[in-house]
Amino acid sequence: MSIVKNLKQYSDECVYFCDSIKNNVMINGNFIRILYCTHHFTMNGIYLHFVLSDISYEKYYQKYKCSFNLETYANLVSEITRIEKAILKKISVMFPEKNAQYKIAEQLQSGYLKIFLPSVPRDTRGTFLLKVSGVWETEDSYGVTYKFTNIHDRF
Image 1 (cartoon, rainbow, N blue to C red):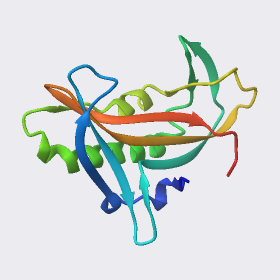
Image 2: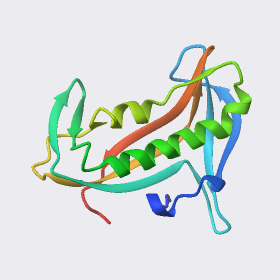
Image 3: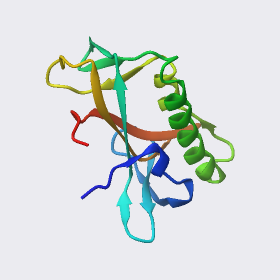
């Protein structure tokens, strides 16, 4: 079971890291699972939901780009960027000589999300889930492992 939080419910103090293991996706890389722990529960990963309106979808290889107005959602982009930076700052002591890669921020600051969908939704409003499952590490850099999903207004 996963517990989904909105951005205001998220707390940097609840983020912990497991031991590094060999990354099965990146060659010569490692993976560090994130745990989100409160006094009441512990989860594998961080699950955050948010709503976007006036969105459009465009096919992008095996995914879709969900475009949104950057000015309208400047605060949302800023808060998700802050969360990504806080996670990477917290683990940076393990990687003093490596460069942090802010891939979530890069994507959002371009005004879109990349998501997997079976077909293009007709709605111009959607509820989305950002799952941050861990941190990847290579010889010279590191960043968060994440995925955006459209959850079709289940909240």
